[in-house]
Length: 415
Ligand code: CAO
Image: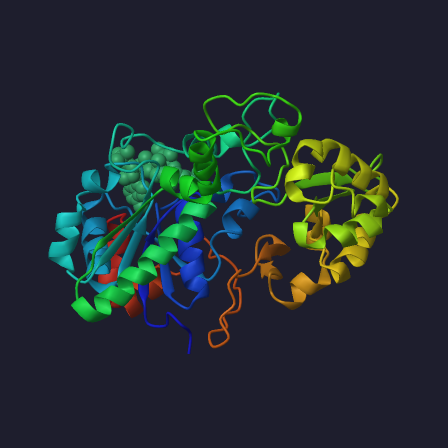
């Protein structure tokens, strides 16, 4: 048995944020029915195409374990099919632009009339307020959620991060909201609306920077490099380069081969509890007892000097040697792993974190598997559906239409 077995999801999502959420629910065992516009489908099917005529990696990597039903929800017959889907499913997930569902005739009030147990889950760019009507994409969310203003170096512009915290991050938040609402429905019998705004999700993930904003009002942020460099703080949480976000100073340092390999770097944290071991490893035993270096407050104004000295040592080792030497001593370090290294890492294949999938149009490709492992609900990653691949199957098995009715639905142009 799979954790969400029996839960039917009407997946009205597209692009990245919504599909991330429904893919996760599919990996937990829900029956996810992806509704797509006939002949067109999710726009990502044909974005960043790398194999002519085949669904793109963008689409396939976000839509595993789903079934695809084509349906024109603006056609009268299509609307009737959609009504039947609403009555049959447990959850509707959507990430249309604000107002699109209402324009289609499926307001929250109408959905409740059709199915009071329905959980209606939405991703929007912003929550209620001045920007609620805006269309929002990943980088807009990163900028509006506080991430960009606090990412990058002090002397450079705001930066977006490569991790898709606005889209995939919001999808993860929404998935949690959905399973929570399903849990509550067990007791109340009622559905509810679930909203995850991209701005809110990014801010939630950037909360340590809101923490620092309030600490800044009480004085300088002493663990930031700029403090040691004597650069005054402004009114808002500044960009902190690769400074650690926690109370223990950390930096990205060069390792052996950095001149040729752009990823030959390690993250190195000068954890207070292992300062003695750090001094021994880098060949600076004199710092162990020196009162100018022995305590964390004494070190704060000298972080550039200290990390410079540590880097002289890391540059003599590969990033993996640094890991091998420091880990047994409980010195927190981490190699900067490239996507190539991750794709080739056998242990990630063994755990199913990276899997190879076969696809009829594009052949074999790599994708991420479910990042959350349930010991009692194993779900194999299955390829994404072709556009409309399961239309007849869903109309007959899930919605109970007869072959004659399916023919007439087809003739109406609804699917
Ligand atoms: N049948 C008929 N019509 C359909 C349909 C179907 N199966 N599926 C969608 N449509 C229609 C919608 O009803 C809408 O029509 P109207 O504009 O007439 O109401 C139209 O297609 C376009 O939908 P959209 O506005 O959601 O799509 P867009 O490409 O213009 O905008 C996006 C895309 C992502 C900016 C917008 O959907 C959005 O802001 N979503 C919320 C935030 C979000 O999820 N952003 C992250 C996306 S990933 O980077």
